Length: 239
Figure 1 (cartoon, one colour):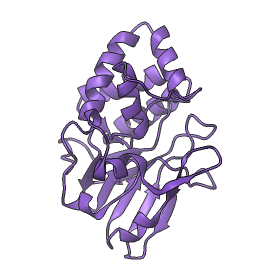
Figure 2 (cartoon, rainbow, N blue to C red):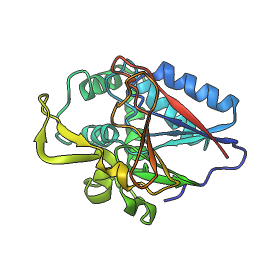
Figure 3 (cartoon, rainbow, N blue to C red):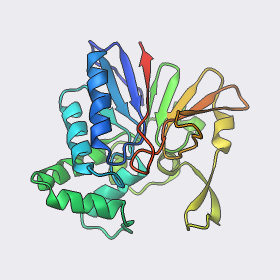
């Protein structure tokens, strides 16, 4: 699925995982507007941070103005299911915090309704020029197959699962009980292509982390810990 940039924009501001950091996200948006940049958020809008409703409101306003969109992240997908009343594991300080913030917010019900629809429509990956944008991890088939319609409303499997969760080792868990994530997919990025992703905070210095692959492509990891003690990062790409 290719990104068609609306007229009037000088490029794209690619924003990493926000995780409820509304103040930082609004600052990123303000800077993008001043520079005439379209905002492409890489997924995981909510959870952990202090103001997930504020993040949702800011993102929905961008969509209304045709000035931005967000990719489907695993936290977004899980939030939608929770808002629909489906049984999900709500991590303390994560999804639990988001649901509590929405319950207290004066526009929480309306934001929840709009979020359900927006998450359903969010693309799982996008291609633009020599870049591919995805939340979790790349697969070469993403270059020829479009993101499924209503990816956020379906059970994540196949390419959508790779897009949301990256690449994991089957049956292997960390000490904290999470799947073990690996980056073998980076070696399958073709030369000349850059994959911009989030999901994994691989940074050691607070800057987006860049990894080169065996085929000559590269991955840029934009999650630098927003909502989890780090900060929000973004990269600007000119037309």
